[in-house]
Length: 95
Ligand SMILES: [Zn+2]
Image (tube, rainbow, N blue to C red; front, side, top):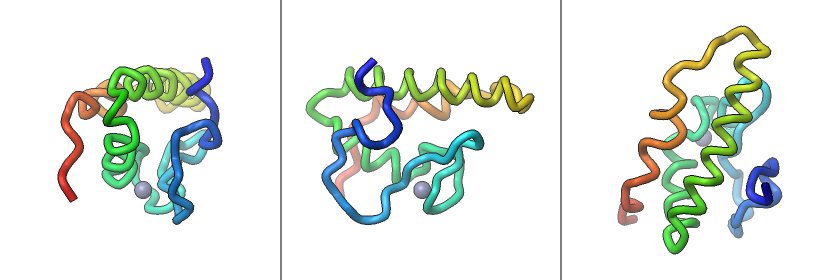
């Protein structure tokens, strides 16, 4: 799946510190919150606003990768749907 790559294959154009996840803990590299953090969600909603279904494909792939890491880690999946996908049906907030 093309969009499942780590960071480099996203549609990101901004070069500022990107709120990407670390593996295997799936916390944000920048703010250490569970990824996708609020900043990452906002950025993704804006980046994919023309292709919301692609955003959900991307997030689904990320969710399954996180699930694998968490199962291997013994953490156990915790409400990953809410974390990765539930918010992606919203319109991007106005800046
Ligand atoms: Zn962050």
